Image (cartoon, rainbow, N blue to C red; front, side):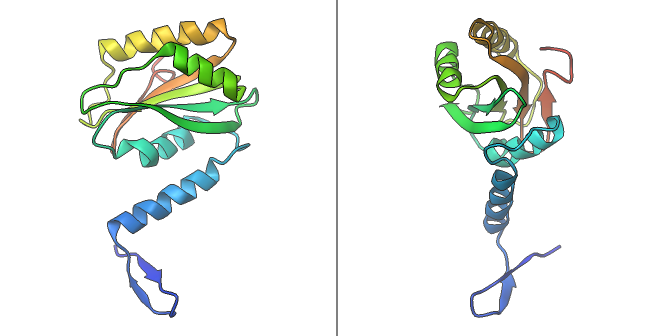
Length: 159
């Protein structure tokens, strides 16, 4: 299947893969603008896949939500290497308080494509949930994402 772009002259040309991804990311950002309600894990997973699922290094990000689970902001907070990223619970709490978050969706990518949570993933999820509980911010989910797969702690009763 080929996709085409219309040039300013009115002619069409085949879109490159990067142009298609750029357009898809822009469309998802419009769907996840401030005030948009998160209806369920599927839309969050689609958004995360486009934002961080394609990366060749780990990124830990937080989707900040208000009390009605409407988007406040998407915040890529920590960058790592191929096999890990250091996550600091105090910084996550500080940012959640600064943004006025009532709830968050934690996320990070696994560039390897294997979204099975590691012992470290489970440990940081527990530590973040405990830290955020202290400041009355609810952890809705922690989603591990790759280009082709995902793992939701909430969907697997791991939260």
